[in-house]
Image (cartoon, rainbow, N blue to C red; front, side, top):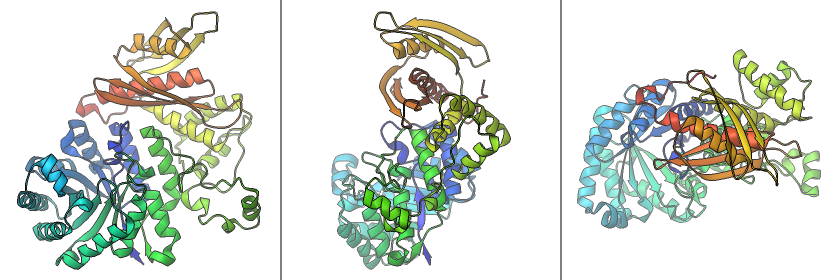
Length: 515
């Protein structure tokens, strides 16, 4: 069965989503999970955009060895050179050159004519090809470009050395039948197209990114560019999990396959959601909370008699456990480890000890610890591992006839204990003021949201915040049965990310010890 190449751009286009910020440790963690997932190509970033981005791409190239590691570059010499510097140590490097081709971009953004664009594209593809044998070219905004110009440009860039040519629907403008016709036109009008892989990169502005991608695959495109959970610019990109499961579930229709280990999809989705701060909507296909939940009595009756009556996908095939093991305060390490392994988490003994301690503390407060509680617990542990300041203690006093007061104790970078108290307009405000006095990093809170991770009066609450400092936005998350504690944890998470982001480039990838 013919394979479709899965090109994941979560770390490049996905991170461009407004409000998504990842530090180098988080990017590495996602890249390693993408490797376990089985993606063929990881677009690790845009090296020329900043020193930190360059270092992130370089570290991924050094540490993630199985997939192709791709770096994006403008069609100019400096960008191509910088891309190569970032990925030169990759086992399988690729340089991805892009340049706008639509008249609206040429007139209003680049202010160049078509001949100049042609020259820039060919020269920089050729430059990239001198560095490595794997070169991709993308004519940006292709779906709003003159098709004949696109065909001519693709032929020229393949001649210059491109081994993959990508057709981007940059602003999500195309309709599936229209997009399929454009891809068909590429195969029929580009004389040397047999020398390159045809790729597609679709955005979701009209909610058609996955449909457009699959329509192109049906015509003959053999690389799909996508992101986990469909995150990305504006309304996002084509969702990797939806494309992959579309091909996997309808093999009878596509007669194609991928190298993706579908049992890793759910875990990968939750990891990206946790690290970017973008919640997966409940009705999201494949990985949403309700994707395999049935409320209708008719549906429930059918499922109990035969799962396939109302489920076209086995939940286990995307990494969701088929049964539920109830965990509580009497559960031991082996039971916890077994449940976490069923959920896709493999823990070393030291990690298990740390998580088990937190689990027992949670189990004392709840009768039953659910899978979603465990996901929140694992996410909380991940946040604590890399810290500059650690929250040790928080206590508040408040009421309708008293001034909210908070006392906070932190562990500092050198292990010193820091304590302070503050008054506020409410308990969370008081906690944040006390933390700010201890940490001393100027910032402005721009977003604060609370949600329940599970049902019931003893539910774990999760707080997501975003704060701004020097024009940059930093996301933080925290979870606890006490919402004030969760708020404090979220604030500390955001502040730690802010502080770590300002570390020197040589220190960016270093893990801070847990205090």
